[in-house]
Image (cartoon, rainbow, N blue to C red; front, side):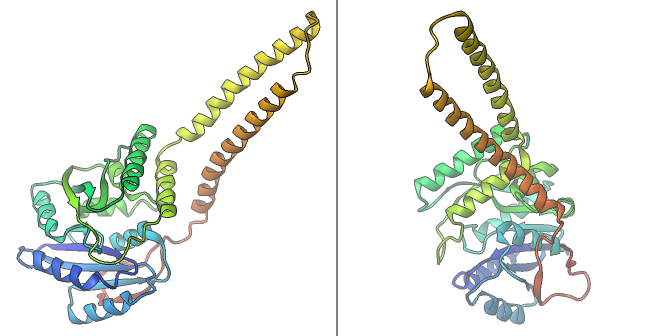
Length: 318
């Protein structure tokens, strides 16, 4: 009988884990598959680890990886995918915004022969217009600047065939944008749309700062356009400055109309100085990411494994 792994990164989700576990079991048990439920605790500071200890002791299908600290959603999800052993691997959030009742639909598409079954979030009940707007804007910018197309509304709720997971494990960059990585891998992909319900309990841990960092990771991971924009803008303003220099010399040498022009000079210096600082910041962002990559530090460290087999349960590689 084939095995389906369900990978669930969690961070301070003590109010959601029990109901999520019950719902997943409710919808998976009627299917003709064995399944393992892999929780990845991303440095929770509430009772989440204690609940995972209890569930893994009560149900051998529940396994948990307790990370040494908080590595962020992309790091925790990578850890779960690295350790999953299923013939198909489903990744999803544990706050009930990724409906467990949809998992059989993903598996049905996999049975049809698709290697990647990606869910597309049409909207989220109760979410603010600002979050919808920023999300839509990010995907439009990302697709305009990158050769790798990322579906607008795409989420980390997806099914991956074992071959895709093995290919994903070859990607070891530090700044991870998994949605782009999955699109980049290829294979036979399809989509299922859904409307995300509100969280069952608690509040979102994905702050504005984390959203901006996530967007920046995605753009810098798959696009060199900001660097090219800086170069082309520099060329344009360089040409303009040469023209202005020629004009100034002509006025000075061949006419009697020379004026101090301090306002023009001051404005030009401020404009060019500001542009230089912006472009240095863009270049610095890329250089900083190169610096992080060359250190080759581990993507995550596992502090504790719960209910994990001694053999065939994945490895601890970074």
